[in-house]
Amino acid sequence: MEQTFIMIKPDGVQRGLVGEIIGRFEQKGFTLKGLKLITVERHFAEQHYADLSAKPFFNKLVEYIISGPVVAMVWEGKNVVVTGRKIIGATNPSDSAPGTIRGDYAIDIGRNVIHGSDAVESAKKEIALWFPEGIAEWRSSLHSWIY
Ligand code: RTP
Image (cartoon, rainbow, N blue to C red; front, side):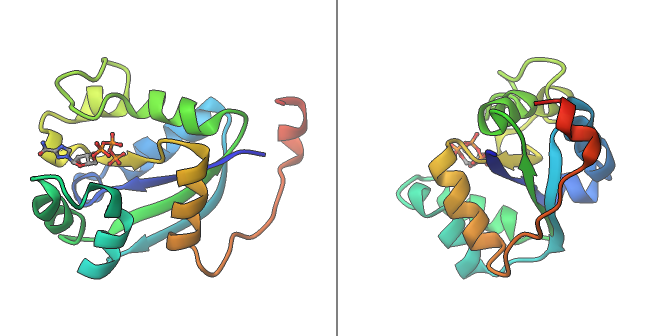
């Protein structure tokens, strides 16, 4: 079953949006497979965003991610990578549709509340980076009829 990596960024944690965000993924029908509150070091944030290291906003982005604890999660379900990105909304909150997380809770691209993997391959890499201890296997009996 497909998995994605979702991170509630420091502004989302500080604004008390953790419960709301988790609720949206739960209500959609996805399964929570990994969850932790963690403050990461500069080197780790740089590794997570390595693909963006040439961008002019890279340093600002890294400062933002290490500015406080984040909530790192693994969510599982059919097409969860693409659907997760839809639930999150466009990168720039000015373009995010109302009803999406960024559309409802963010204004500034530099404080856009949440990250979600952009492809199945990057999800695998990000899950391995953020959960080197592995993900415990469990399956809700309620979910057997959803897929
Ligand atoms: P994310 O990785 O956080 O889910 O975001 P994304 O795929 O939607 O967007 P991406 O282009 O990968 O950018 C990663 C994060 O960098 C910050 N950003 N700042 N012009 C700027 O100041 C700027 N552009 C991007 C955002 O926090 C974005 O989510």
